Length: 115
Image (cartoon, rainbow, N blue to C red; front, side, top):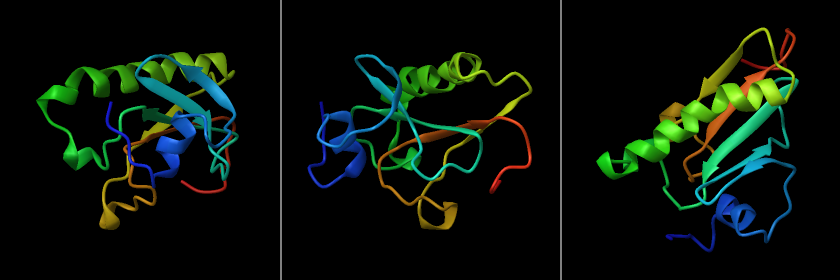
């Protein structure tokens, strides 16, 4: 599995940096964002290092589908019942801050801090 030794999300996936986990399996890790924009703000990351959504190809289709399909389950488990938001920032103009593919899943009562 591909890892970047300088990537903070790779370090979290490897257990080198602690995170408040919400879900984990062989391919994915989900943890609470340390700077949440909403009452519930989770990050879904592949354990494999992929820098951006633009770096994905046909070989990532199943992984991307699993990431998206996991969102409703995660929100139900977190008690979010009135809707949620899914965001993937891509590249500098897309607002990506950490260059490891990740999906924000946000929900909870409004108003939110951002978004």
